[in-house]
Length: 136
Image 1 (cartoon, helix red, strand yellow):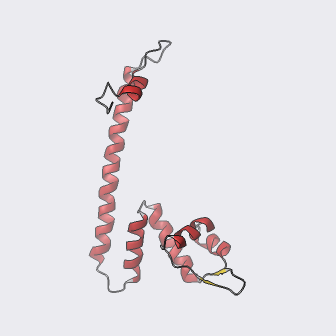
Image 2 (cartoon, one colour):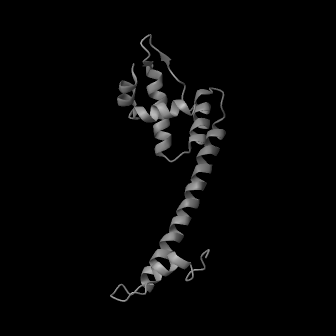
Image 3 (cartoon, helix red, strand yellow):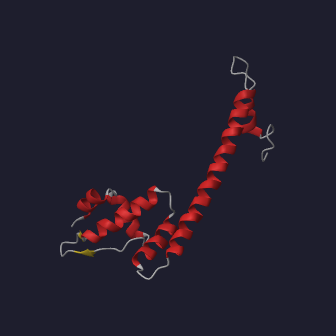
């Protein structure tokens, strides 16, 4: 099966498939005598697996580890669970960070008069970081 067909069946763009091959996330397929990539139906399933994992926000490194565990029939499910829970912890950290950013922006928007006056706490914070103890 050629790359266009695999892309169609897996839902992963051909460019992304080639990228995954280049970084070694998935195996490079054999080539036909005319030089085309020749994929098997198993490659479609692997790409769907990768796509689902990436859709859940797993990093390339985590996807690589999950694929290795998926292919290892003697794996411990605890290893898979650890990767998933570590990812949940990372999501929680990012959510807290986003909540803090949201809080800051709401605070700044509340301080801004939003009228014809030129002074604006939002721009002041971005320029100098003075209002909320920024880096500058």
